[in-house]
Image 1 (cartoon, rainbow, N blue to C red):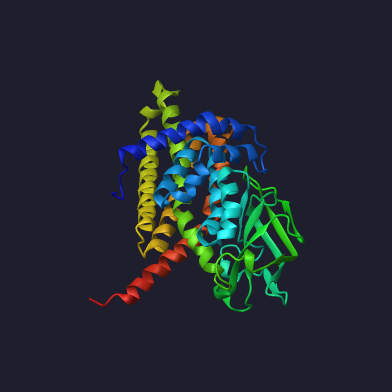
Image 2: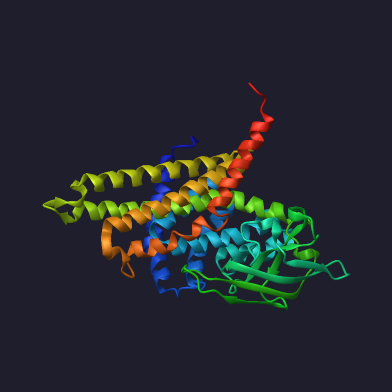
Length: 378
């Protein structure tokens, strides 16, 4: 399909998703407790077949799914995305036994997943992680250390955990493990964060793992992490685009109807121009996200650069658009419970997680210079 347009059936599907989010998912989200896993919401996502769709769809469909849900119910979008982030390594790198055990429960919304990469001293620099996998002398390992800022922790039923199996080897010495929550020595606690979903720490005090828990090959876990992040980075951009569009929709409705100075806010050139800028930036971000997702689906080798560009532009754009919508609404947008107050809190984190804005710029520059060195001089 063309990278910059959607087919009629895709447009219809997105509208159906927004309707499902409004009718079925938002009521469950509204009943959830901030900072806790909303298991009824996760179960509803499973019942509707949306979690299963994560593992059957390509990157573009994933982006359309996340954008559509985010436009109506960010909590549902986040719950869905976290199931995908934690579950994708199982789907893509798991053994037949792991897949048989976990994927049906993940897709049905019965098992809550976590993606445990970040650490107190290794956030954006994933290759610097220090969680140790110490050989136990019997072909397995014991995990020692801590993970931090992990979504769905400590309530997740299992986590995809990245640990160092070869000291001093950088990204080449990292291994991915599937670690169920009931393993001895595994503990955690919630963190009070500026986010409505669960975030916490995981502590590993000699947690036993064996060859049957490997996701991929030993010392090849960095590939598992990057494969997952390259798929989800454009869709983080889609999440941001959905929030931007929701803020833009709210700003359009408010400025068109709000009386001001003998007319409406929309009659003021400064307001109309701000709306035009918000809309243009949102559309530019959307198109870059779609292009990156299409490149992933087509196996383009330039995916790392495109994914980084999509996440960078979309998350920074969403911050601008939501902030502008708050400004156009005035004080009412800062009242607890207002859509824009909610979006204002939600929109900040995507500029940090799955690679901060500065990391995305580093990736883009690295890819550009690598291509420059490979191309013959004119």
